[in-house]
Amino acid sequence: MQPPRNRKDLQRFLGLPGCYRRFIPQYPALVYPLTELVKTTTGGRWGTEEIKAFDDVRALLKRSPVLRLPFFSLTFFVTTDASDVAVGGVLSQVFDGVEHPLAFLSRKLSDVEKRWPTHEKELFGSRFCLEKWRVNLLGTVFTVYTDNSACVWFFTEPSPSPKLLLWLDFFN
Image (cartoon, rainbow, N blue to C red; front, side):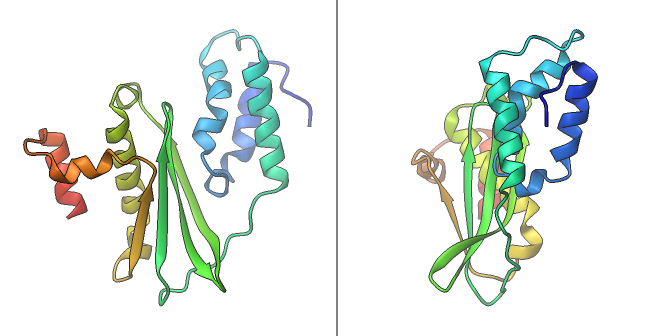
C-alpha cells in the first residue's frame, strides 16, 4: 500500500481502517497527524510525523490482536488512558492467567476538551469507556485502571466544579 498522493487519496485511506478502528488501540491519536492534513484545503505537506502515522496504521492493520468473547462470570478490567489529543481504553479479562483484550475504544478530543487539565482528561477517558461498555459491565465485577494518580484527588476534592460534581455522581 503506497502513501496517499493527494487529499482525496488520504480521505480514502482514512476511511479504509475506519471500520476497524474499534480493534486498533488509540486509533484517533494514531491518525491525528493525518486527520489534520485532511482539514487543510491543499492536503498539507507530508513530514516525518505524517509518514510515521501512515506506516503505524498500515502495520497495525496487518497485525491486529485477536479479540476474545467475554465471560460474564469473570472479572472485567477497564484500562483507560488519555493523551493531549485523544482518550481511549481496553476492555479485557484474564483467561488462564493471561489478560486478553475484548474490545478497544477511543475518540479524538474536541478543541475545548484538549484544554482540560490532565486529570480531567483521564477521568473523562474513564467515564467515556464506562458509558460505552455499560451493557457489558452492568451486574458484573470490574476494575478500572488509569495511569494518573491525580484522579484520586477527584474523589477527595472539597469543592469540585459543577462538571466534576456530575462526574462524581456518575462514578458513584
